[in-house]
Length: 214
Image (cartoon, rainbow, N blue to C red):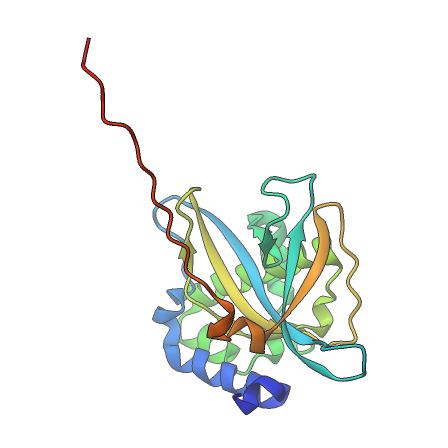
């Protein structure tokens, strides 16, 4: 097993380096979608979780399970949601303060200097993801360490583009889900990345031949 999966310091340093080497363009360039798709931002949230009845812990991906009161209930999803330009725009301006996630991110000055428009949109997305995560599970934004953006993903079933942002939060945080979230689920990375835990299911649909046209 990769030692980085058991060492939070090494893993976060590795993620910081890899996301920075990808450059602005491969991370979506920080630009909003130009095809009139709605924008959402989510946190790919990493933390440590207990790995058994004892005191031992391991690195996990933190997900939400959607409650029966929302669409797609029971699905697992990353915390986050739709961009609210007015509210999130105001919050985004605060995130660059030295004690907040963007201000602590080592590449923030480079983004602002090289691509100011991209930097503003990145701040907007991070503000959205942090606001939604606080609403959904009471994630404390002051304890979040921002590691960098991933390339955006376009949904096929909805006219929406998702902007994922990688972050780390301490294990000491206690989540309190709101009505949108049934429970918070922590999935160990070693299990998530284990090929033996995946199967491929092939579904074959047979349709009757078309009948005569009247």
